[in-house]
Length: 373
Image (cartoon, rainbow, N blue to C red; front, side):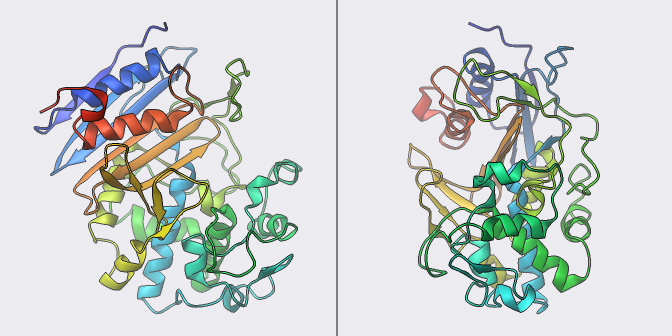
C-alpha cells in the first residue's frame, strides 16, 4: 500500500465534503496516482481538497491554484464561443461547413456541403477523428489546424450521412475553431479570452499560442504512461508539451476554481441567450463513449450508478485528466484533476475515481457507504 501525501482542505460553506476527501485520499493511497485536486462550488461557498503531490521529485503537495491542461473541456469553451456568435447573427448553426471552409471537408465519404455547424458541435457529423491516426499525428511536432483536418480526410467518414449517427471526433472541434476564426477575423485564443475568460475573471484560463509549450506557475507536473494499460509501463514527464495537435479540441489550460466558475456561469445561463442555452443542452445519445451519457454542444450529461444525473465535461491529455460536472442549473459544481493518465487498484482508469467522487459529492456518498449528512 502506498502512503498518501498530506491532504489539504479549504472550506468556505456549510456542506460536509468528508466523503469526497476520502475518495481523494484513496485515489493516491490505493489508486497510485501522483496527486489529485478537487473543488466544489455550491451556493456561493466552496470547498477545495487535495491529496498526493504535484511534483514527485520535490514532494510538493498539490495546491488549489495549480494550473493544468484540461484536454477536451476545451470543447466547451469553443462551443460557447460558437453559440455566442450564433446569437449575434454572425453565423448560424444550420450553416454548412462548406459555407465557411469551402472545399476543406471532402473525400472518403466526407461532404462539407451537408455537414452543419450543429453537426460539429454535437458530434453527429460523421467526420473521422484525426487523433485515431497516431502514426500521422506523430510525423511532425507542430500542426496547423488544416493539417489536422487533412489527416481526417484521408480516412473514411464514420457514417455515410451527417445526422444519422453519433461518433466522438476531435476533428469536429478543430473545424469549429477554424469557423470561429473565419467568422470573426480573430484568433480563437483572443475570442475565448475576450468573451469568456475576462468577463468571468478566469485569470488562470487560456488557450496557449502555438509557440508556447509551457505551463504557467504554479502548476503540477504532468505524468504520463501514454495511456498504456500496462501497470509496469514507464512514466514520462509531459509537463512541457506542444498542444497544436489539439488546439480547439483540447489545448487549453485552467484551474479547478476557474472551471467551477465557468461551468456554473454557463449552465446557469449567464453566458448564452435562451435560444442558444436550449441548443447547448439539447442532448443526443452517445455511442462508444462514456457510459450512460448524452451529449449536447460541448456539454455532456452523465447518469451516475446511483441514478443521479450530472452535467459538464471531461478531458484528458498526456499526464492530465480532468472532470467538471454538477447540477443542470450550475448551482453546485465539482471540478477534479489528476496529474496522471492512469489509475491502479480497483479503478480501470481515472474515470472510475471521478465517478466515485461525483457519487460522494452529489449522491451524498450513498453508493460508497459513507454516512454524509
